[in-house]
Image 1: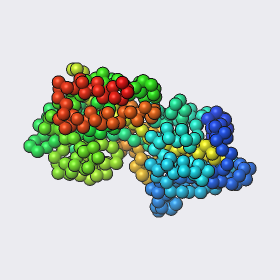
Image 2: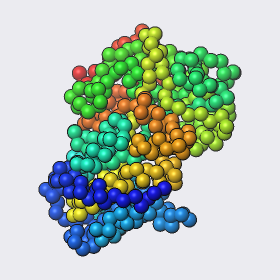
Image 3: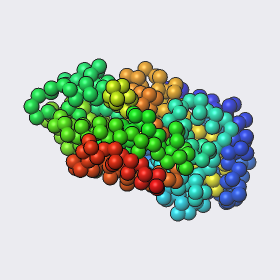
Image 4: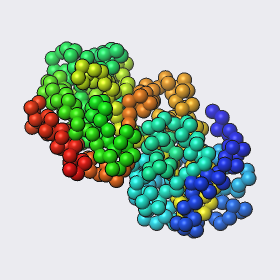
Length: 428
């Protein structure tokens, strides 16, 4: 792995333009340093927040992989006298902690992309521009670019996706059979065996079925706050789910994911399950050589095969807009979210990359989880909307899913229930 690949020729010339175009608001927000020595002519200290797992010591990386990457970045930039101040911060807590005091927060931090609206509204993350944004757009899928885009601005460098896909037992389904859910449900897997499990009473999973029907959530790409949803125009989806729920071969995992489906895999009583990378190790342990994973299946609606599509998000690297050394901070963020960093995160932590060239590496393609997640992102996902009115989506969608699984919605009531969900989201 060529970790010492020189960045300075390309980055140094472009970062100044990047900061002028994309980070100018930082000067308006604050002129104070965020944990660094002043002046790019002297020592520049950048404060970096990263999860504990990225700073855990190992034989090859005694200080952890993020400190190692920062050292590589320093070697690539001899024109800057760089020092780093590390802090432990999970991606899930980054926004909350940064917004407590931006002047004391990290200059560069890793965060979950659903925190972007809160960070942007509070002035807690820098808007990127120039070559950094050009590289993000050129080297990531549309879903991943969308995951760090808010109100037209790009606010981070995505480095691993967050989505869900299909796990299956290869002793029960062939690779061909798992391409279509109806094919899976029609198969007799034996007494006491559930064919398919999905948390349809959870509003993070439910949209996969409505997207299959061509439904939209806040416009075609999820960025139009005023567009509302067209999910309410697709009663055929609710009818499909009512039939699915009434099938004894179907199991609805609890909305809080209580592990029942994992237990079924362990006992050899489940054919397939929709979940994400967080369950990979457990399912792989339970299924052994029968471990299978791929993108979500198609479903049959009105006689046509329609691809289910998951919500897609990401983990990303962002920059504090109050930091004094903006040029260096943006360059470091671009490196920590870029190609070489993603290679290392895949090798050490098993993170699925988003950078196109890394997803094409033989070792990534050979990894079942990385291959399936990449396939899902590229072919069967929609960027989870981050618009303000998304707050109006969760409860009505969950209510529909719960009503279906509780048996409160019949085929005769499907159209009315679907419309009611849509109207509730659209505030009609």
